[in-house]
Image 1 (spheres, rainbow, N blue to C red):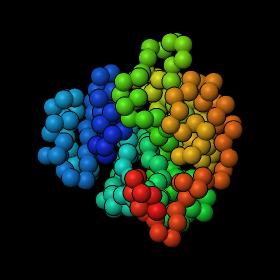
Image 2 (cartoon, rainbow, N blue to C red; image 1 turned 180 degrees about the vertical axis):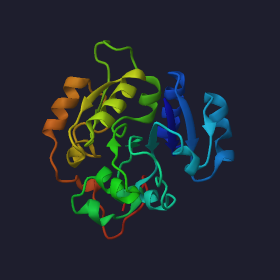
Image 3 (tube, rainbow, N blue to C red; image 1 turned 30 degrees about the horizontal axis):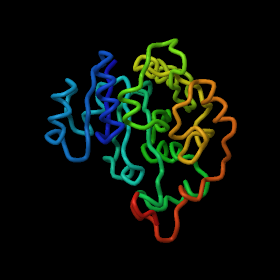
Image 4 (cartoon, rainbow, N blue to C red; image 1 turned 30 degrees about the vertical axis):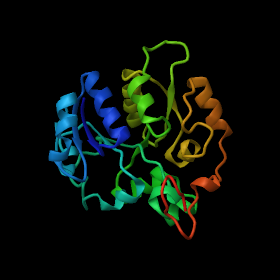
Length: 231
């Protein structure tokens, strides 16, 4: 599969390693340009490209950048991109630590639904509940007892199926977490967030989630601060 990744932070780098290790053709981009990705490209065999190039000629595009940077993506980035290209959002909203207040999210719009509105494309939410190091190192063969599972939310059944197959390929079980409107069940502060549960544990945690945002993931008048000193 031809995969474009926008964002080369912890999750983007981990996905680049894992997807290349399973034989996928990966193009990686960030806001600083291809030259800044030379080492990652050399380590993995991925192509270092511009953001615009990361979405062209791809079967699937993964957006893994801070929420506050979504609005800085090039205007019309997906113009002319076929509708069957799957777009994955891995993002998490950290208002007090990094992103500042985004009012639609504060008012209850699920994070990835907000992202979909900003980019003008449907998205599948995945890869947001696991630590990057665990994503990189803790994949296991299918059928391994206790295999870590990842929730996948989205409105297009075919797109979700593509993402769930990809998750299985890189060593994790995938759990259908429902439509994008229910993706708040896997947002920061939810029972499944940052937990290495198996499939049964993920399903249980999703069912136990409450729609109210936890105070530590709700913006204040002084947001943002930093991860060391949230505001």
